[in-house]
Image (cartoon, rainbow, N blue to C red; front, side):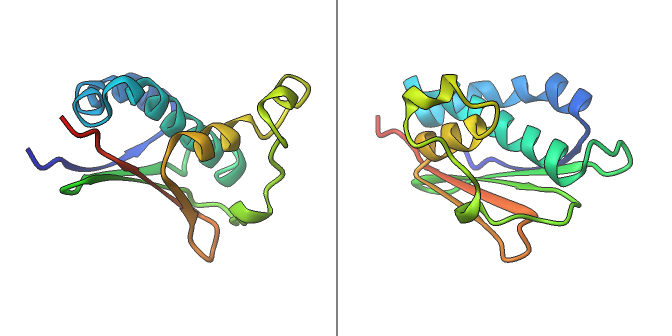
Length: 133
């Protein structure tokens, strides 16, 4: 099955519809499917809060494409952008409990195989290898 979708979401519609991806996530990622679900949710929340500044008129675009050996998850906001490499991340998992910010980026970095942002800083691409059966 080749899976390809692109949707425009507000937080309410994202929460209502993300469950439709769970079966595909389970097929693609096996026991790591919940972690990918959480990484996608964190990336969406960052785009909504920090990119779109919670402006209801600016949807977040979620694009998911299945390749032969990998799945591509792209999240795009309509904000001013940021640099993923310059974002402040907790140094290790122990410091997560002390930090108010950075948990989402930490989860993303430790869940997917690659996380990249475009030069404008408005689009994040997460790439995750499929499990082999």
